[in-house]
Image (cartoon, rainbow, N blue to C red):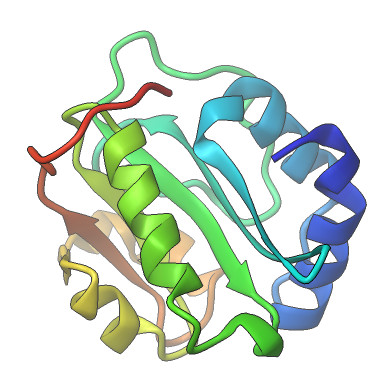
Length: 162
């Protein structure tokens, strides 16, 4: 992802997650803090989706529409903040490809995320499993009634860097 992609990222976020708005500054900060873990998914000369990820602590959900300010010195997971695809890109394998790329970028860290709006089936197919932790319930509610914290074990098949 490049800074020039941010207007498209914002538009996609608004279209895909209308009930979960985030300020444009949140997207810009994620890109600034973890540029290697932010992906623009392109097709037909346009951005059709994106993935925003960053190193983080295990079991610590980032509240919706919150700035991070800094990343941990000793991260425990690569936290997938958001994966959003326009309808034209769904079913193309772009989501699964983004997860494969992020697993390689994670360099031995597990992946973590919050599954929203019934996306648990997709995430399970990508190797994620729910992690129950009552301490996360309050922040998960901000993501909606079906929100789940999920993790995927370490991918030992590839390398990369955050």
